[in-house]
Image (tube, rainbow, N blue to C red; front, side, top):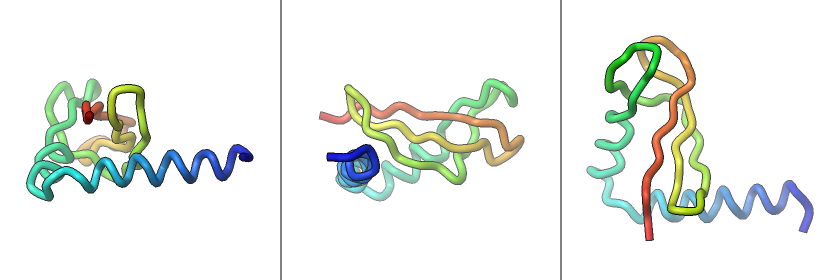
Length: 76
C-alpha cells in the first residue's frame, strides 16, 4: 500500500471513530481545546482528525488567535 492510500485509510478510520461519539459529545470536545497562546480554553477550527495509538486527535487552529491547537481523545 502506498503512503497516500495508507493516509486515506487512517483518515477514514479516525473519522469513523470520531463519528461513533454522540453529536453532543463531539460539539463539547470541539469547544473545549486548550490554547497555550490565549492561555484559555477555546474552540478549535479548520481541524483534521488523526488516528493515534490511544484513539484520535483533532489538529487545527484556535478560533480566537489562529495559532495551532490540538485535542487528544481516548477511544477504545
